[in-house]
Image 1: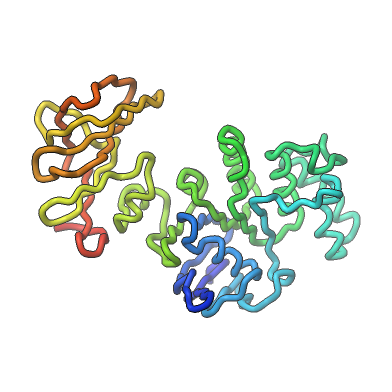
Image 2: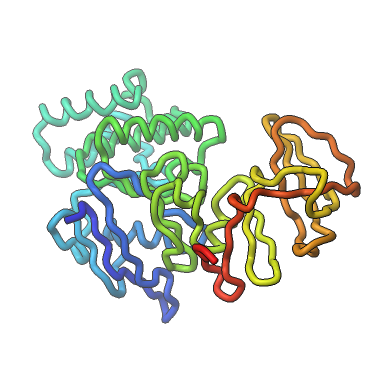
Length: 333
């Protein structure tokens, strides 16, 4: 039996279905990311697992226990929020110990767990500070320490890094993944950021309008997107989609080359980003004539004149085929 099992889970508000019959499982020690755009149902799904919202239909099993209708306090899980959810009048130490005191954990055990948690997140020098005296990254470490100290078998995280700046978010992403691996935590992590999901998760579930578009390893999303939605959501820049005579053709920007012979295109812009230059073109001749804003990612710096022409091409092995009518992947012709 899987560690966490979600079966036919749905949630409706006033006859509007925000989570529509989703199914997935998580193994113990796995890092799973619920990914998708705003309004896709990922936070609602997390809240139903946490017991903060009740499902309209479906079941949630943790281990061999049905927790679908249990109150949050009896679900044996911890939660890390986007807003940190720290008590402003309590010190770092008191915030970490709050849940343990509420559950009347033995005092010696409290001290043991506190010491272990603060060492893991490097908060030894900040124990007596209030949240207002901490940076955003330090506040998030307090929230993580509180979750570690709880020793809950399942940790739920709702966009915990989104309030941090880019540099700190990258650092915290690495720290969080290291902590999860070293402690063997089972994590469900909600994010709208595909880079976070691709770099941290063992398994990704991509939601779109309350439904599961695709689930699997990060590699499967990049190498074999199951729909045009997945193709356009995963990748930086995302996959180019061009409508041919029979199918929609998908090609990633890094797989398009400038060649002497190919599809004639007009340059719209060049965006130098250090390691690569992103070139935006419109295809003006050939079977994909009319395809606009096609992106190429070329290594290094390339200064090309806007309005000038070039020929682009790609290997047949690097193209992906999708149905015109359904947008779903076509495995082979």
